[in-house]
Length: 434
Ligand SMILES: [Zn+2]
Image (tube, rainbow, N blue to C red):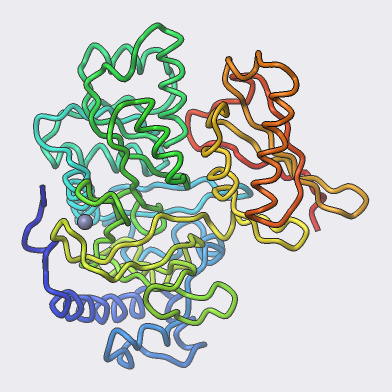
């Protein structure tokens, strides 16, 4: 179902003229109210008045996560604190979190875009939405919560953790839609089986999974194990939180980004040049309706491409290809660029292997080493040594064929890799920091 028929199906030229008008207004506003933008525009020799077409956007400087840290906590807010009704923060791996603020209208807009996203995923009034995204400073829980209420569905504010209780509630309350990270959905399936609950028999029909990159192979695994349609959702707190873009259930191919609120660009992450439509690179997003903390050309570090072809669902908003990883997550192993999702796609195509793995990178005698630890299922684990050796050899060969690097493969016992209730920890980089 299309939630907002008027805005989700606008003709391309109307979307673009709306974007330009909203962009110009946003630029005037941040230039007038945020010293950081005034300074960075001046340094780049640009003024808001110079932006006369959408193409002119590329003349403006980028905004980086570091700029948010440098202006911690409220320096990038475009309104006085009296107009901010909500504050969220995303945890950084190091140091201070990045802080975002929402006005009342921002919260309204967020709820509206999340309702749109739920509807695109096939949810509607009458659904019981089991929201297992964390509630708190993280935007996932409350973002999905407000959207589910706006949609008119019944939302269960589960938050993360307490897995046994999650299963009981799903069973007793008749949850029909599950929202959590993709890795946690597999953990739920596994835990349900241990409780003697067949999760495939529950009422779940759709799962909306995000907050970490995942592969097509993992989708197939989740759909099989939980007996539902697995939908990819995209968002980041710097831009909004969840609901920046989502796959439609009609196509399940590419995530519609809500272009009446955001302008996406794809750039070469090294040169910063804008790439032609269809090419893969780093996603850059400009917000054009946000009041609290507008973002101009924010570098998301997510690697994707724009799909300009029209979608069968009738929505006219451009699609982003499923994220193949974050440039931050990209590992350089012996000079080769490696995304954990590439190794995941190899593992998930091999029988006998479970969807739980960890990559351990180390350095021995100045040479990077990669060890792939992957769980095997109970049956394979009890197989004879020869079979396990063959399996190890096959994984090693397929990774070598795909990436051109030799790795160690270690098959580990079922359930021996730590499970996460939020984002999975796939990578352990033990190399000394430069
Ligand atoms: Zn679509």
